[in-house]
Image (cartoon, rainbow over all chains, first blue to last red; front, side):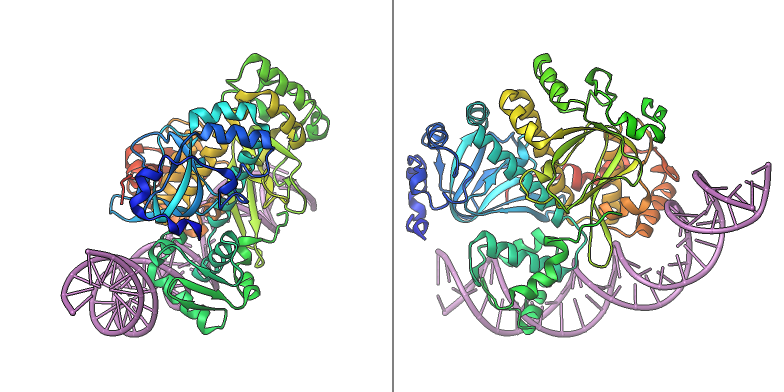
Length: 249
Length: 249
DNA sequence: CGGTTCCTTGAGAGAACTCAACGTCGGTGG
DNA sequence: CCACCGACGTTGAGTTCTCTCAAGGAACCG
């Protein structure tokens, strides 16, 4: 984890570090990756010196103002959430390396949520105004961005189904395993409370389901460290969410 | 309703009708609307003779194959849904005039759902291959499409919260009133079962909530016809979904 | 090593679901 | 034209899943 070598005290000074895509730990997942050398150069130039190092709890954006920029996560973990009148927080999404923050805000006057770091993170900042200009000149990037939004949309629609706690948690574990490129063992960056909020469950329910999974031999769970023992078993549970059977009415 | 003048028997013959944006009943909501005359002409040319008239139950696309085209709804109402192993249908989205079908499929190899007409409908078909070419030449259209996807994404994320049956139904009624441009009185095109599936509720729960709303004087409800008597009351209920209070943690 | 936050487990409550029955609407065919 | 049929809508009773409330233990930070 190269990023962990940045102590928090460097956040401000390092915030003006020149981003270097060729040094980016998330290059393989970045929407800019896979575009031509030329387009990547455009992107890199437009980024300028925009790189931020949010520490846990630090807010990147909130609903008080229009989102001025997209952020691509280089390292760490962030969340987007809303807070209702009773003060209950609802996590809308987790952002891991390679993910793009703010795609749900480009069509809105006000950003509908607050974004905060869960663990110390690195993000590349791209102002939306500059992005609009950039998209005119970089068709591959445009296409990547559209496909990224499309996948996000499909994912959000899939998760919006009416599923049991076990199905949700199983799908979440599989999704995290995939997104973190973890084989078997993974370290969940976020607390149970956030997982629960994201999956629309109570914190206790998430705990109970994890315990049940452990008793069934599907996983072992030691706080943040989860080891997937029976991925097929989890997939069986998560199937209605991940790959629903598709038929005509 | 100009569309109702198309009897179903004309479906096949009319399927090759030349689309005319200047005659489109949904022009005001279409993503192509508002672009320059030039871009609109590009779009219209690319559409060719692609216009379909799905009748109720007719399937536009299903998960068996990659989605080959986007569809813009000219008239009617369609739904996108999945079917799980138990045969339960889950409605992912409703599409009304001006809506774009398939935005959630551009990043996926296989379309994740089935799309079928609820009422007799008219849709413009735009092949994705042609669309990709078109987007290179029509920046305003690109931007509209991105903003549309962004709003869809934000909407999907908002609805994915953990809300009560009353909050969901209230938000749904307000959303339908807005999308159908109905002032007070609206005709819901879809059956209760589909509403329930979309809101992740049981059909009976939707009925009960509507009855409760009627008893409270918020609405009157006569089968498909709903009249909103107290929009502010509904907004009060739906507020956590529509406009969550946004604060930093 | 004290305090706080997080995780876990238990007991009771409540919201929505399932099952079941009945009324209504719309299309079809006799 | 009307009776029939199926799908849809509505209401009631009982059940279940998840939530809330509560408490204890573990991990982390100052």
